[in-house]
Amino acid sequence: MRTRLRVLDSVRAAAQIPGLHLSRNIVIVGHSQGGQVALFAGQLAPSYAPDLHIDGVVAMAPATNLSLAIAAMRDLSDQGGITSGKSDLVYIVMTLWAWAHTYRHLPVTSIFTPFGAEKASIVNQGCLSQIAQALAGINPASILRPNPTSMLGLLHDAAKNNPGLVHTITPILVVQGNRTRQFLLS
Image (tube, rainbow, N blue to C red; front, side, top):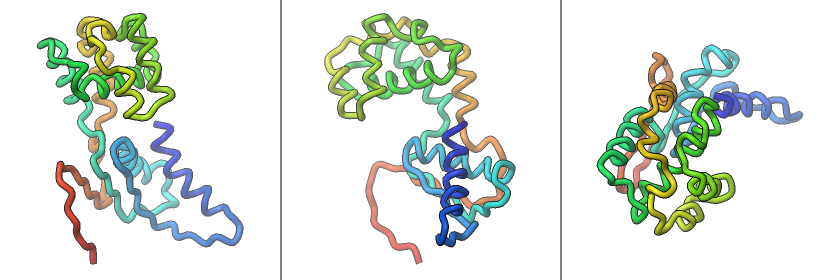
């Protein structure tokens, strides 16, 4: 929640810089996790920052429908399909590590083995490639407790992180896909 509000606070802070004349009309743009932040900031702006006018929100490859992602993680886990050779383990570890530190009722020890908690702590220091390197070749069963995504609290928190549950009048552009295309906006 704090990050979503900081986006709006940053606009207000920039307006306080002497000699800088900014419009209160803004467009919020974000990519990946920033795309999710942009969607939520657009939802929260009318009540949190009524002094700002949001002309639009652009979310590129946003993290959306996280409860579906958690269910997919659960299905992978149940089928023994979480692998160290694919990126699924890296994203699962990053997600579960972040949530264990965000939602205190999901302790690290309930999700990760002691070895797993040690390995997953790279999330605090590294970027995607460093995290992937640290987890390369590790058997997922050695770092994740059995069925970590079946916890009711995890599914509940995932649902709270699904943007789009509030009606907004702000125009929203969501860009998803696996191909890069060039286009001109006029």
